[in-house]
Length: 629
Image (cartoon, rainbow, N blue to C red; front, side, top):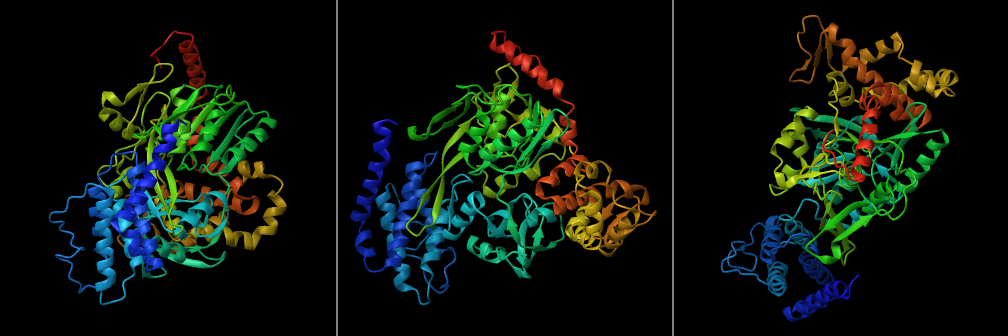
């Protein structure tokens, strides 16, 4: 690190503290510890944004947004703000420096503290101001309350008990970012994009993150009911969720797909991911693995360093893995392989989808740009921004985007976010239902400036995630599966089955998991029990039904000719859930991949493409660039 890059942030901090003194804030703060913390917190947030954000930020815009947020939810509705320091018409306001911004906000804060006729929660008003300050920034720059900071830390380094979701409050609505793999919400079918609007029968609109954590976390075995609005569904869906210990392991499953092919599924990049991945690879190699399917579908990312370490394992020393680019020199860097990867010669297929983001895109982007392996699946999310976290005086935190990352070919895979956070978050739901249709539409709109070349000369694209080398159009879940998940029928059926026949089942199958995968199917009597529960939940089977459909009351109508196809995925998921209950979570995905998800089996047919890709890469590295695929 250069002397200049070391001194610059330090000097800015010193100057900012001096400005606090000049503006009079330190003198005002002496009267109250709470006021002192609030004003220092506000000043520090604004300073950190100006000092570190990847984009050039207008101080005036930050100030104006913060004041709008400060007064948006005032408890004292009788308070006149026109012509006072709280006035958000901003007549003759011209903010050009941190000092002006701090001074103006201090006046507004003190005016509210001294003139309100009701008790005002000034801590919350300052949090409102800070949240509003982040509104014009990118979607991944956020304020994090103290309790939420602890929760996030738990999710990446420790254990906790709750319903198992990652969420964000967007426009006052709890929005599921992802259901934590194998947690209670994941098992019930709660998914990314679901909006939780009720908790235990009461509206949750307007909840703070603290309110959400307080309501949804709780001891293992306790239950909570949530009402969910799902994009594309008119009726509210009710789920009763039994809280459980949320798994922290990031390798969901690792096993041999056949005599030579290993499979590893990684659900996020946390502090232990590379260690878990290395252990899984060691176990598979002891089983004579010769090639690997790495499943990063639904992996939202996490620790950059862990993603880089995983990528390093597939490349020789010195290979460019990813670069970060910023307007600040101290946040601009290039990451190269620091050692000869132990798996640099193993044939590789990487699975991705629209839930693969950030760290998943770093790994798959490096694999694709160097033609190191085949990327298979659906276009990824498109999150190419790097954040740094800063702690504030009250143990809250802010996460600020400090740089953009570039794949080895130089492409930025971040999708646009200028149209607002909500549109950004739900962009994946506006994509074509067909993965190939989505990719075709995306590629047709990519400008020449976002078209790049791999080592072998293949065309790849920036500006909207990683486009796979081989697209897989996966069938959507059947309507019967939706009905089953919505009413928690599958999970309760499996639990009842184990209660009734668990001893008998274990005697027959417990030491024969691979035989279970190949030979077990639900008996006719068990299917009858399941169908009875589906009928009770609103499933109507009639030869007068022309198309499978839900009515306005969420009853499902099915023609007998369509019944077997409708039940294929529900029965397969229940078989997988049975495996999870008997053998453990890591046994869930082998059955899912057998019974429900065709992507892995499709990948197993693509090894010739991997071989051809390797030949193209070697030819290019020998100086004979080829554009053929």
